[in-house]
Length: 344
Image (cartoon, rainbow, N blue to C red; front, side, top):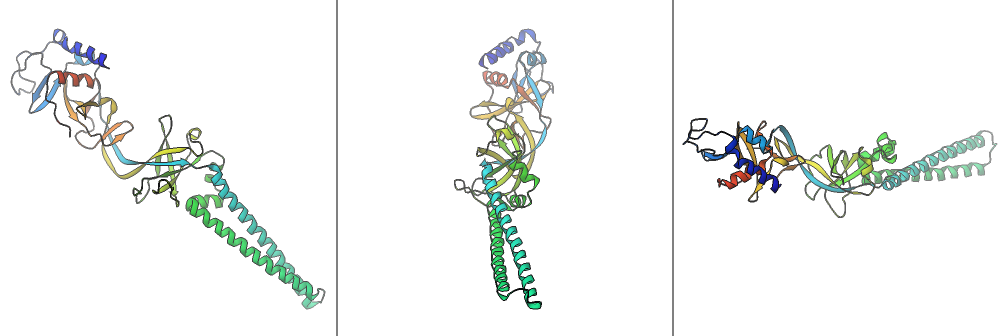
C-alpha cells in the first residue's frame, strides 16, 4: 500500500507537466482570490478541498461510488449452542412412553370395566357367575382405574415438563409429531438456543437472527419461541431459533454466536470499508462535492455493519464517495499542510 501511495504521489507531482491548470483565475464560482497553478489543495469558506482532473484521477486509480439509502436496526450479540439431538429425543421418548402407558392403562381399564359389568349382570339375572367372580372383577376394575389415573397423571407431568424445558411451541411440535419436529429429528434442520446479555431482553423478540459461522459467513435462523430456561453461565433471556440452511456447519453441541435485531429501525446510508481512511485516531472519507472537487468528511464508527459503517447524518443517498484511492488523497492533503479538521 505504501508503494502504491508513493507511486500515486509521484504521478500527482508530475501532474503539472501533463495537465494544464489555470494560473491566475478565480475558482469556478468566481469566489476568493486567484488560484496559483497547479494548486490541488485549497480552502473555500473554511472548508478544505482537493481538486483533481479526470486525467489525474485515472492515473492514481481513483474510484467513486454513490451511497445508497438503506435501513438499519441495531443487533445485539447473543451466545449459545446448537442443541444436541439426544436432548430432544430423550424428551420425546419420555412423551411417547408416557402416552403408551396411558393408552395401555385405558385399554385395560375398559376391559376390566366390561368384564365386571358382564359378570355382575350374569350374577344378578341368571346366577351364572359366582359372587366371588364378581368381586374379583370389581377389584380388578378398581385397580386398573387407579393405574389409568396414575398413567394419565404421569403423561400430564411429562407434558408439563416438556413445556417447562422447551417452551410451548416445541412441546406442541412433539405432541403432534409435526413436520417441524420431524425435520429436527431427521437432521434436516437444527435447533439453536441463543442467549442475550443480562438485562437486554426486548419486549418482543425479532423474528430472525444471524448466526456467525466459522468461515466468516452468516446463516439466517427463524425465531421459534423464548426459552423458559436460563443458561447457568449466561443468565440472560434465551431464545430458540430454527436453522434450515448451512446444516453441515452447525454441528450438534457447537458453541455459536448470533446477532439478534434490537431496538428501533433507522434510515441512512452505509459507507463501505474501502472508503474509510484513518488519521489521528478518527475515521474519514472523501466525498466528491462537484466535478473534480473532493472534501474530507468525518464519519461515525459506532455502528458497524457487514458492508462497512452505517451513518444517519452528514451524508445522504447519492453522495459520491471515494472507494479506492482515498489514502492517496489523504497523503496529498497532509503533505500540503491542509488543516487537519476535527472528527464529529
